[in-house]
Image 1 (spheres, helix red, strand yellow):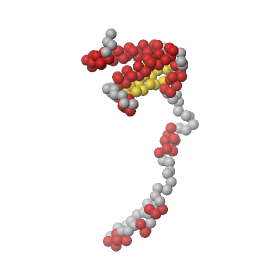
Image 2: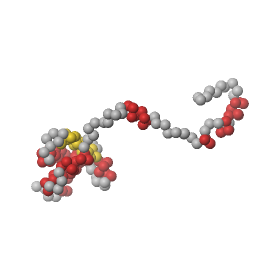
Image 3: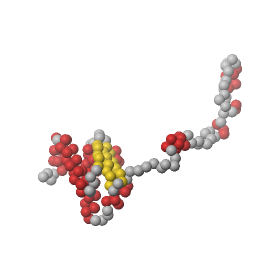
Length: 168
């Protein structure tokens, strides 16, 4: 209907709720084309995601304004990110229609981890990471000894009644 993309962008600015409906319908068509029945998607101010299950494996596609900015692409909001993901899935459908590779080959990097390793409990792993010793903290010439405290003798002469406690 509209061949000029500039006119389409101006039209979308006037009718933002129409843009959302168009994007959701495109996503629905693409998912039907990929033969994915159960999927979930959401978008917010800065990002979006699409989650789906394919042959019993969970997958998640994510996009954000920051990721696009790193590549020099300017996006307005999470809906633009969702449009980008939908467009990428449409392009993937075209590649799959050519018969070059199967869908499983393209989405292997998007697979969600199914389970954590059961060998080490989560709290024990965190304990080892947070409290791991890093060895000697100061070189020997900076460690506390009587020679490195230049004002210690003057302090003891001025305040002889103050008791000092050591944490050794």
